[in-house]
Each structure stands twice: as structure tokens, then as C-alpha cells.
Amino acid sequence: MPSKKRTRRKKKNEELNNLAETLKSYGLRDKDAKKQSGKHRGPPKARSVREHGDPRFAPIIAAALSKQGSVKRATHSFHTYPAGMHPDCARMIIDACPGSVHDPFCGGGTVLVEAVLAGRQVSGSDLSPIALLVSNARTAGPELATPLRSAARKIAAQAQLRIDVDVHEDLNNWYEPHVAQELGRIRDEIPKYAQEVQPLLRAVFSSIIVKSSYRKSDTTNHREPHHRPVGTTAVLFHKKARELGRMLENMPSSQPHIFEGNACTQIPPEPVDLILTSPPYPGVYDYLPLQQLRYLWLGIENAKVAQEIGSRRSFRAQGRQEALKEWQERTDEWIKTQTSNLTPQGKFAIIVGDGLVGGKLVDTLFPTVESLKRCGMKVVARASADRPDHARGAIRIEHLVLAEREG
Ligand SMILES: C[S@@+](CC[C@H](N)C(=O)[O-])C[C@H]1O[C@@H](n2cnc3c(N)ncnc32)[C@H](O)[C@@H]1O
Image 1 (cartoon, rainbow, N blue to C red):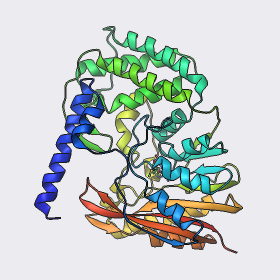
Image 2 (image 1 turned 60 degrees about the vertical axis):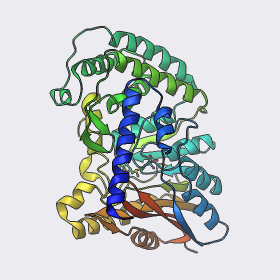
Image 3 (image 1 turned 90 degrees about the horizontal axis):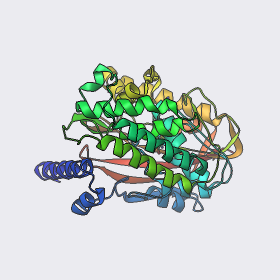
């Protein structure tokens, strides 16, 4: 596409996104903005999907990779999380592979939610404390729905009283003063409620931190000042808690094991039948620093940023070659660690996509397959799809690889 046209389209998308945000901040429905844009949330359409390998699995893998658009079912739409897997994609892979499920890069918990819904034994880990907060909230049981709503109603009422609270000075830059005060009051009220409901209240609080700030979105630090009327931040908190409560009512009671862990060193807690995961693509995101506003509000210190794999900042700091070498070494390490507790018949499914470094694409399929082979795994089937990356004006190839032990 000629670059002028691309710039015009990018600008139009930005305008539509701004419109959506503005509508939301005035309490109007997101649907109104979507109607104007005609666009869906979720992964963009996969073009030209190619499949290879075992005909029992290859069509399933290709169909799973082709899933697109937003999914409202279960708890998937609660709390934003960058680069989430498509829930239907996770579900198709889970349905094709029996037994327990583990995701060592669980992020917002898409795989965990789908595995819980499928009635499997489930575990997941991640380096990011926000990933753990979101994953735990999305897999919580229906018994917490009522206590959550009741606590949130009282907190929202309290947050509207004009009592001065302390707010970290780094946060004041990102909020209108009355919004920062309402958020501070919500934060201070949460510890007054029962232990079991506090993580859910924190997750709900976390879900409005970026939305009510000047930050344009979760994945950028660009500022977009907008006005949020007095009292609406507390109302938004209550609304989000009610939404999560409604979603939890339809979740099964389950106890997934979700814990902090570096995928390179932390083996799955039990022998596992399916590892289904999506590691960071090289040079695309800085998952841990992106959550800085949330760390400040939630009092989270020492998020383990140095252990993050494939971060964008590492490519900037070390240069393409060095950072790529490091990404490949980390890929070797995490695949080896995770394979070490895979059952003999177990399956390993990885979704990985081209990285983007200095405007150039970085292939991830070959190094991933080579790492699997070095761990005694062979590829059963795989699929690849061209995925338009509207934000960066590029087409990136995404791959879904299904592997099992040799022999
Ligand atoms: C592509 S996202 C996973 C998204 C997830 N599949 C979902 O649906 O939300 C990659 C995740 O890897 C995590 N991560 C990065 N380096 C890690 C490491 N060394 N160990 C564990 N998790 C890591 C990031 O925090 C991020 O949540």
C-alpha cells in the first residue's frame, strides 16, 4: 500500500480510537464508537494461513490460528492485557489435547480460563505481578461474586467523599487532581475488606488505572489529556466490579495453581500433559515496564524486569544481533525447562510471531523449532499466518507449532 494511504489510514484509526476513549470517559457505550469504526477488538484477521504436518492436527492448528475478533464469553473481556491469545484458539488446542494444562507465560490468563472452563487441572506462571493479578481474577470462582460487588459498592461510596489522601508524586502527572484523589481513596479502602476479596478488588482497581489516566493506552506512554468529571472514577470502579461479578457467576469453582516464575528456570509444578503458551515476540513489547502506573498505585516494587525475555528495550540497548542471540538462548532455556516436566505422551503448543526490530522483521519459527528439537521434541503439525500489524504498519507472520516427544 502506498505510504501516504497508510499514513491516512493510521491517522483515521487514531481518530477513531480517540473517539472511543472520549465516548467511554463520558459514560457512553463503547459500541457507539465501534459502530462508527466498523472494527472489532482482538487479533486482526489472519491472511493466507498455511498448514503443515499430521493431517489429524494440522487443520485444527490452522483453524485455531485463524481465530479473530473480540470474545465476550467468560471473564476474557475483564482487564486489558497486551498481546492476549485468542480464547477460541486456546480452546481448540485444549480440546485437541487431553489432560492437565500449563502456561508458563500466562499473561492475562486466556489459556488458564479456557482450561478451567474445559474442566482441566490447570497451572500457570508469569514474571509480571500484573499478569498474576489478572489471571487470578479471571479464574476466580462464583462464590466471590457477591462479596466483590458488595465491597465495591461501599468503596465507591467512600471514594466520593472529599477526604484528602496521599498520592505518589510520580502519579500526579498522569491524572487530573480529583481523579488521582478518587483513585487514592479506592486504594486506601481495599485493605479494609476480607482477605479473599482483596485480590479481586485490586484487580478491578488495576483495570481502571490506565483508563482514567492521561495515558493513551496500555501499550504506549503517549499522553492524551481528557476530562473525567468528578465522581466518575469511583462510579467506573463500581461498574467494573459489577461486570466482573456478573462474569464470575458463570465461572466454575476451580483452583488453578498460578504463581510467579521465570519460565527459563521454573519447571511446571506437576507433570503436565499440555503446555500451551505464547512467549514474548522479540523486540515487540516491554511487558513489565508497561505496567509502571499500576506498580505505583498497587505498591508493587521490584518487578523482575531484568529477567524479561525479548524486551523491546533490550534490542534498543544491545543492538539487533546481540539481543537476538540472547533471545535464542532464553528460548532454548525456557523450552528445556518446560519440557522437563512434560508427560511422555504430552504435547507442547507454542504461538510465536515475527519480531520487529528497527522496522525489520525477525523470524522466530526456525529458532523455536530448533530449540524444540534440541530438547528431544519433534513438530507434529504447524500453521503460519500473515497478520497485519496496524500499529506498526507491517505484516508479521505468526506461527502455531504443536510438538511431542521423539520416538
Ligand atoms: C505474549 S504475553 C502472554 C499473553 C497471554 N498468552 C494472554 O493470553 O494474555 C507474554 C508474557 O510473557 C511474560 N514474560 C516475559 N518474560 C518472562 C519470563 N522470563 N518468564 C515468565 N514470563 C515472562 C510477560 O510478562 C507476558 O505476560
